[in-house]
Every structure is written in C-alpha cells, then in structure tokens.
Length: 282
Image: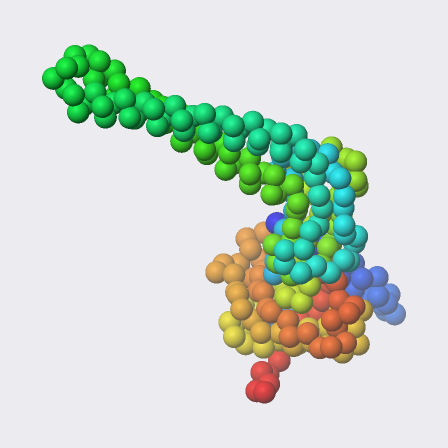
C-alpha cells in the first residue's frame, strides 16, 4: 500500500511538471488525426517510464505491551545492525508479574506431582481403594497437570514480554521515522520507529498497457533520479500479472544495482525515470 501510494504521487508530480514546462502554441493548428493503434504502440516517452524508489524491507517496530518508553536510542537516518536496540520500555511491572507467575508455577508443579503420586498409589492398591476414590484421584491428577502446564505457559509468555521490552532491529537498515520520545506511554501494537533496508533499494514503475511487452523479468533497465547525476542499473524481478484496471498501466519492480555515488544520497520515495537498457555482463 505504501509503495502504491508513492507511485501514484510520483505519477501525479511528473505529469504536473510536464504540463508546467509546456510552452503556449504560437498559432492555432488543426488537431492531428488520431493514429491507428498499431502506430500508437510504437510511441514511447523518450524520458522513460514513471517510477518511485522504495526499500525491499520496511517495518514499523512496535510495542508488544502497554508500558512507558524509557529510552529511544535512534534518530531519523540512524543506521542499525540486526539485533541493535532501538528503544527500551519500562519492564518493572512485567518483572514483578513474572516473579509472581514463577512462584505460582512452582506451586502448581508441586500440587500436580502430589496428585499424580496419589493417583498412581491408589491404582497400585486397587483392592484396598474404592472405585470412586480411584476415579477421583485420577481426575484430580489430570486437573493439576493442566493447571501446572497453564502456569508454565504464563511464565514463558511473560518472559518473552520482558525480553521484548528492549525493541531491536530485525534486520540491517536505516531509521526512516521516529514516532515517540522517552516518557511516552505506548499501547500494544503502537509504532515506535520505522526501519527500512538501506542498501536493498528497488524501483517500482508503471508501463502503459500498449507497451506491456517492453519489459520482461530478468531484463535490464536504466534508472535516473533528479538527485543523482549518474544513472543506476536495475534488474527486473517482478512484473504484475495484470494491467491496473483504473490507470491502464502495468506495474513492474526492479532491484537497483547502486553506484557508489548513490549510496550516500538516495532516499526511498524519490521519483524516478526508468528506461529499458541492454544488460551488461560483468
């Protein structure tokens, strides 16, 4: 959804810029006769197809529990390695709850062990124990075992939540947005920061339906953005299986092979112009 929105914005911006640059006609001319479809298919914008740069991986890092934010260790543009801490939540109440759950789990295990031992003893001396007593002991053993299992699961759940009080980067990337500051009270699922893959950038572009055969999977493209003088190469990895019914365009995605000049100054979301290009064998 984010990529589709960016592509729509890029399309609108480039069309507006194109209209703004048009010079008024010096004289009134008769409207040209529409060309047959067979000829229109061959017409192409010399500047290429309209596209937008986007990261292959992006995620909003969110809180798993309701807690107060103790520390946010990143700013916009902070590079991170997988496993590095992004923010820390106040886990004091969770730790207290974990301690109580661990004590309850120990008590449940003791009760379960005693109930199981009693049931086995009654079964072993069946001739001296009534049938009702044996059935009741077996039932109590099962109930106690279930309670112990439930208590143990609760401990595991709380232990995970305590660990997740430290929000870490799931992959190498760059912080693209920071949503909260220390002291804020967050709820489960509330975003803390957005992380995007810094080097794995792609371009998503749209091809008019008349030119749907111009680009194929594993074909190569040349990508230009206003912020960079040197064009980048790209390898087409995905082509939409059908034309967008509203825009009458076919969406294509290509992985960028970033030149060194692009690595420090390229941002996701930039509008781009994409053209078919011959593949270069290393």
